[in-house]
Amino acid sequence: MAKTAPVAGWAHDFDVLDPGYVEDPFVIWDELRRECPIAHTDRRGSTWLPTRYVDVTAMAHDVEHFSSLEVAVIPFEGEEPEEPVLPYGLPPISADPPLHSWTRRLLLPWFSHQRVDGYEAMTRQLCSSLIDGFIAEGRADAAADYAQQIPVRVIAHVLGVPNSLADTFTGWVRDVLEFADDHDRRLRGMEGLITYFIDEIARRREHPGDDLLSVLLNSQVDGAPVEESIALGIGALVLIAGVDTTWSAIGSSLWHLATHPADRRRLVADPAVMPFAIEELLRAYSPVTMARVVTKDVEFAGCPMKAGDKILMNFPAANRDPDVFEDPDKVVLDRAVNRHVAFGSGIHRCAGSNLARMELRVAVEEWLARIPEFHVEAGREVTWAGGQVRGPRSLPVAFS
Ligand code: HEM
Image (cartoon, rainbow, N blue to C red):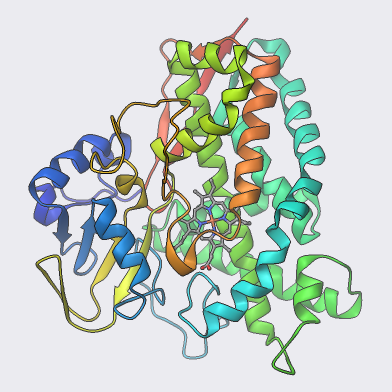
């Protein structure tokens, strides 16, 4: 990532790409919540960072003032083409109503409980075969060799594209999300994705199947076929939204279990805790921050926001708010009351949450079944990615 100037003060000059923030944002959010609950910066344009649950959720519900037309946490700094290939961006995530409503409706059935149940056996088989690949060595990179490999293959299955492209997809998605401050990489990732989906759409027109893209292309809304650029945007979104996010959640959960032996042993001994533990790990290590753009000047919680300002929807900080969660910095595996917003809140609430939860649960279950005892390898570094999606990118663990 490009180096940025040191932070002069978190309340008025925050930087989500600051290495200290990426490594441990929790202490910074605690300090801000106490002293300046909505921080501001002029880095990369005028941007606000709410840290309280009440503010984040209120903003998520106020689509009149806080639009989703710009959801990238790191703004794109290149020139926009005169005739963009994706004039509507990646709906529904980058759309306001009414476009948001019908594009979301097209997508939701693909991630219903029933559909997701149908993906569980292949996910379990995939996790198990990944573990087969390294278990005999007694060590692995739980982020790169395991967590990273799972969601991209499940999504490829949903989209009806070959598994052999998994690494290419992962590369593009990382270029777009993780290396968003590197102009050339971001452009390369987006171009790769778009070109790929344009070719796939042409192929599906000739040989339609029963996959998501084919069905989108043959759908009608209000008596008219879905525009190709919208089908393209939805397809690209499913890949972008479903890969880094879930990989990060799996990686953070394994990091927690590697570093907290009592929690690890409890989960192994009492699998009934698993459903609560999955929610708690999602709360404590929420990977996703999204952005909004202010539509008209507004004073929000005493902050003078101007049209065009960005808001970083800090769902991860909301999930550590002591006004809502008792002992928020502690992972309580069987936390009973847990209204976390790891999947967002309001009309844009994650459309893939059933799939994400299933992948996370199955990945942790399969790992613990085969590798119940593991720890971070002494002397090896755990590295984290931050910005839009936070999670470990390298997690060297050893086991016997
Ligand atoms: C642990 C993994 C995941 C997390 C934490 C997560 C988180 C989120 C969040 C916070 C939002 C709200 C965005 C906003 O308010 O602007 C969102 C939206 C969305 N997510 Fe996820 N997500 C995950 C996995 C997935 C998966 C696996 C898919 C499916 C392939 C997916 C598809 C979507 C879509 C389509 C939206 C847009 C919904 C809309 O705008 O109506 N996500 N996600």
